[in-house]
Structures are given as C-alpha cells and as structure tokens.
Image (cartoon, rainbow, N blue to C red; front, side, top):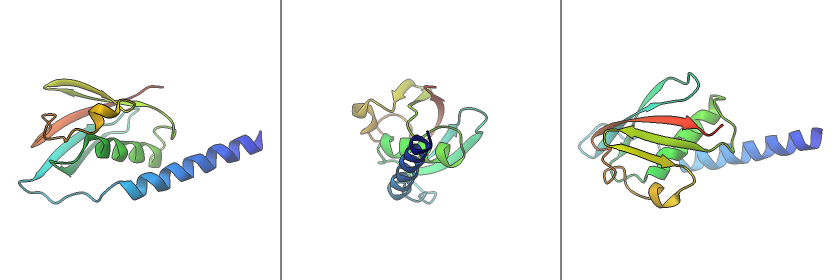
Length: 120
C-alpha cells in the first residue's frame, strides 16, 4: 500500500517537473499576444494569461494542467476539456491533432474565454 502511494507521488512529482520545464513565461502585452481567460473547474476561479498568438493549444493545455496540479484541483493523470463559446469549439487533451494548432488559427486571438472541465 505504501509502495503504491510512493509510486503515485513520484509520478506526480515527475509530471510537475516536466510541466514546469515546458510552460513558458507569460508573454508581455502587445500586438502579438492573446489574452486568454481560463475558467478553471472546481472553484479554481478565473485566470487571465497572455500567450503568443502563435502558441500551440498544447502549450495552453500544459499551463492548465500545471495550474490544476499546483493548486490541487486535479491529479496528474486527469484528462480535461477546453471549450470556447464563440466560436463554439471543444478540445480534449487526448486529441493531439487539435492541440498542435496555433491559438490564432483557432479563433482565440486577440482574446478568448476558455472553460476548463475535468473528466473526473
């Protein structure tokens, strides 16, 4: 039982370190930046963060996962969905073809509201 708990904790720590290395710093406000308002699940609140308009959606997903893990909103292996209302789009973290598109190409530039829901 303790070995399983330690293994799970090790996996979580490795994932946190991986995400921390992948998540780029917030870009400054400017013509090439897009402000995304992320509505987090489970009372996680709203986060406004700027990304480059050329940022792949996967980078946004990495930021969301890191934020959820650091704030104990989700486990490291939880799947989640990113949804926009206008235009209505649904992106799941397990569909890599959607996650490689730039946020500009997905209509999220110069700003967008994204609702985050977990698969739990």
